Image (cartoon, rainbow, N blue to C red; front, side, top):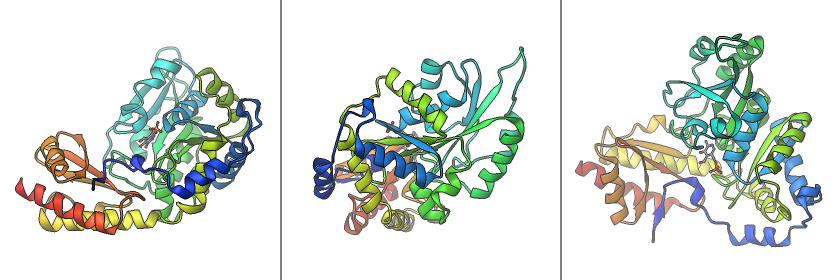
Length: 341
Ligand SMILES: Cc1ncc(COP(=O)(O)O)c(C=O)c1O
């Protein structure tokens, strides 16, 4: 049996989720007639404390629609240099929307409010690129599942609001941030102008993200989604999986977090120095390794799949398809492989 810890995106829909998908009432969502998709959008907007929301096929599309709404072509967004939006969306902000990006150096992906304040150049006139928006990722994926402190976001919001700079939240794993910190989803999301959340990660749905914002912005996002080829027809069949995930998979995220911590504890005992368990905040564990490709290959030989973040860092992500026994086994294998050096 393979224990797949490469990402929380590898989950497969359960039989009950598939049954919910099969039973979903559907209509043509490009005509605004899909009741299940509309129900999901309304539910997520309310959960996040925004007026409206829009279903998208991917988190990348939700992020890209969000920044497109906030940043005019030729202006810039700021994000950290490990953000998914700048590292893993294949230059979409520039290639699709004419947006330039400047970054601050990420330490565990944490928001660095003072540095952002220094980087911002709103309304920079005809000589420099003007800063239109800041992107925050919460939890931070490549940073190791880092939860952004709500006080930092609130201070950032004050500074950006004073400067007329807008804010987008990449909340692909906002569910995990809220579960770990106890901060309600809407407290985080309400501080942002646009927010993306994903269902195809820790929540276990096969497909789907949602962008939340004001009603006016969502009207515009709907136009851009269609323009980019993301207008879908009887998509309630997918939205039903997301509704199912909210009902059944949200309250269990703390289990994934406890398992990530357990994995880190096991590996720290077998291979001291490779991971600091106290830094594991959610469902992502980053290991410092001498040679990530070798560690990944060594684990694969023993049926444990993890990923390489770069040459010196490997990543394991817990999720609803890995149980306690799987974690014990993965911890043993990883510990042995890392102890070998
Ligand atoms: C933080 C973060 N944002 C956005 C995305 C993009 O999601 P998708 O793969 O659905 O485009 C991911 C994907 O892993 C992610 O980790």
